[in-house]
Image (cartoon, rainbow, N blue to C red; front, side):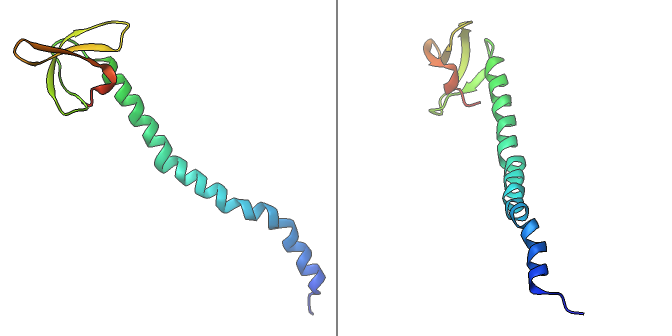
Length: 98
């Protein structure tokens, strides 16, 4: 009629270690799918858009300067942009924000 305390403790002891790590694993899974994976997708999109920059494109530098791409040096990270008529500067590809 009554369950002995020793028998009840044995059943919970078998599930204890596995159940203790389950919430931690679930939290990591949610963290991965809500934060890490979307960030990786955005990084891939930014990298692809920076690789697709061509002459004549309008860009904004990280400093907020609006410019027109005049020359893209292939195999290099440098891009020559025109920020005003006959005013050209060389910027790094990574400093282009959009």
